[in-house]
Length: 131
Image (tube, rainbow, N blue to C red):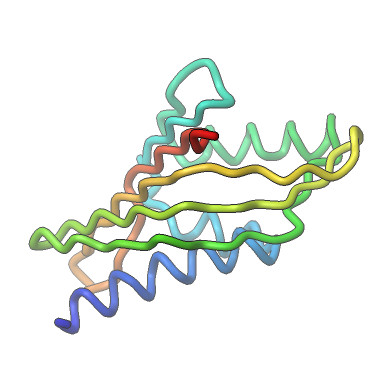
């Protein structure tokens, strides 16, 4: 594996770990400001990391939304020059005012290498896993 592959995978792993551990500042710092987000739980595309963060704050304030854990499996990273496509199956345990729930989803995270050789997520697509 190439160094670019390893550093892109490490960036994806850091993003997932920050999400799983509830480190929201680190989680949102893993995204480019103009990143886009397509979630099966929202009615439209989110067009920036700040728009997603505002939605996250709303979930937290209105529903006491909190991530309790997140497990990544069936992982694949495709390196395409300065772009990497990371796909995986994800099992996330969350807590809200309604109680705890386990979510089974599939996710694609597109990363792009910056001039400083860091990798930032530029797109995230989350879909429900088939039963």
